[in-house]
Length: 114
Length: 116
Image 1: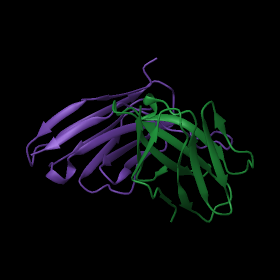
Image 2: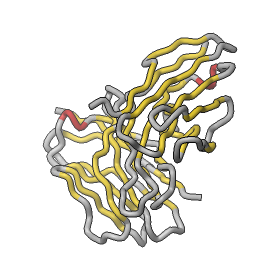
Image 3: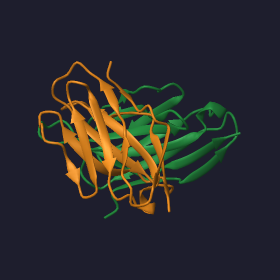
């Protein structure tokens, strides 16, 4: 069965610094998608970034980038120039093409200090 | 652009009471989902519906029923609420199915349910 593991329940970073959130997953599939979702205190789930497993190039979205290591089954999220508004729960998620569901990790709570 | 709308946002129930959480999406998505979120557990899938007329169990279906009323609407029913069902519930939808589509989920704002 596919599983997603986020081993850091909490992380903290100072404003303007860089932080990396870890995610590992277990699958026997070769083709799949990976996602990072952000959940601020408002509870709304917001898609931050996505990665297709067949693409070797790491996805980037402004200050957010991923380090996708397919052989190691690792998918970490790097937040550069952290801002107070980045404080939130971050969830890593996995999906195979055509599959009807996303599998989520347990989340990492990120605190940003001024 | 409403996206995914779920109601109610908050509800307090007594043990044994029943209630239905409603969800509607206006994005013409095929698939809809109900997740529950508990501290330290992440999001766990309760039920999902890959298309109108079909429903399937997820990871934690016990104590719940669902109805895919039409393509837009997917409701979650608690027949006899228990304190263990105190949680935040999220409805979501996605296009899925077609290769090439990422299948990302679009979420509602969540419903906080407390069972006393």
